[in-house]
Length: 368
Ligand SMILES: [Zn+2]
Ligand SMILES: [Zn+2]
Image (tube, rainbow, N blue to C red; front, top):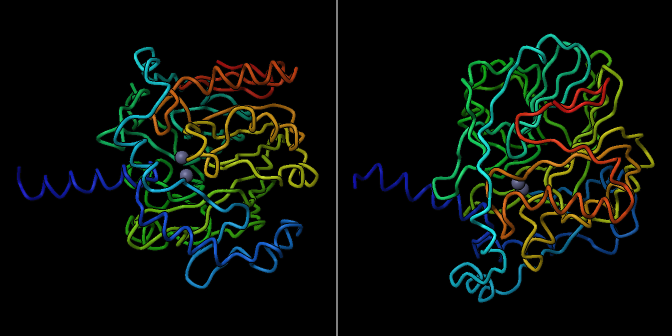
């Protein structure tokens, strides 16, 4: 093994460990971060007020005012990861590999609002003539984690983005290799922070948004909203050095789209729903098991239905599933379980079933 290869392998392992939230460094710094939040103050305070008072801004990091992360003790994490305490294993042989093929012709000619689910949490929103990408991940980004939705087309065929939106810095959302595929002059929209990453990529055409900041371009408005999550890229530097968030896009075509990004359930969705009339809520649903570890990072199917109802959105779509197994549940379970939960709530006709490589055409409300 050459030295370079060894370092590469080490870095890959490190990245994976960050991703599955395995580092105990992070657990100790979580406690430090949580201690900085003034819980009594934020509990009943409206989201806008929390933001106005910058209660999510710490001294040298950002704060998640919506949850005290309890990841169980170190031994439980070790037992889980090292001794494979996992009730889902028997389903793994049935996880489907879905190569993503795209026929761009129809989408390129289409002038309305089209939403393409590419892979993992990657969305391509076509709004009129403009393409907006969310959290672009085009490759297998983890050497030790299988990619169940490899792209089976030449990525040079991807339409040029008008904006690239990043929800947060976790490696399955902010992927430098994928970003470097795009023209350096592409306009980036991200939560505040991430300066060294984008500077390193030479992508300096940027707008950084704090929660409730809105970027207006013609008839389109893009707003960053609070959510219950966190971010980290380097456990030694620690978590939350940059901000995270959901996006609300008032499209130039008309419909309003809510993009949750990674979020745990929190009791503020009705507040967002009261302020914005949402046509389509897109939730990141995946990596939610085991609950004792994931509940403070990722929403589960039953909570997604609850959040969807509280948002008072017209339709629901899910992403962040099918590509990388980051939690215990098999990659295809979110799409099965959300249907069951929507059925239970009598909301099955409000669920938009979409697979990797498919597009929802808004005017006909067809998925092709
Ligand atoms: Zn995340
Ligand atoms: Zn994620």
